[in-house]
Image (cartoon, rainbow, N blue to C red):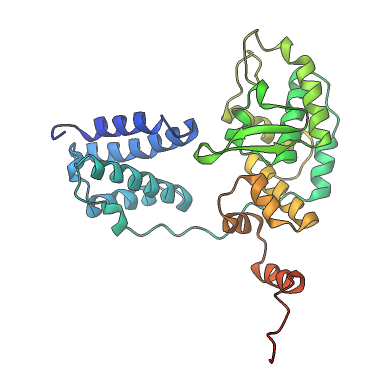
Length: 301
């Protein structure tokens, strides 16, 4: 494909990616690669064969200068690397130039979990009983009960709910089943009882807006931010913070890192450790104290 432009190659790659990746992943990669196309267009570069370490380093440097956060820069780099791998397979590039670029350093700070008592008061604050308020309560309870990501909650359909569990599609299109707590179950039952007043027949989305269509990511984020103000929570609230609070509070009470890893849908235990701010030294001490072979000395020592 010698005459194919960078924009055409990107579109071909995203179409192929959509066959096996989640819509959220495709949307994120589309945004990252569109930024690359704009950067190249501004320099009158149209051929994908022009992608080399110098050009990509300049692109990421321009994105950093534009104020892009380290986490977003790391995602840009990951998207570039996957795209470049694909170009290598297509014979457009001889090798992947992204391997020559340093990964942007990630900040060490994490979202602070909401205090467990403050969060309980927030969730228990009475509402006016309107259908949208009942819906909001169900979303809040489900976020905190099951530790869902924003994209996972927004994508829920009616048939993803069972009596005690919810089935979600996580990152990398990995399905998992997560328990639904008693409070969340009651809130969802109340929402399902009045949902038909908003959703038209045939709408499968679990959470819908005023017009009866699936509630989008931005709308959910705005509702949580507004509720934190109207219910008197003295701090900003967003879905990721509720997920972090779920993980931290559950870990504090259970000390079961593996269980929390499974519930969050993390492929690696190290991700859960970072996510929950659990001290590895504490884990090592717990291991030494509990594991039957950790504290035994070899014979003759």
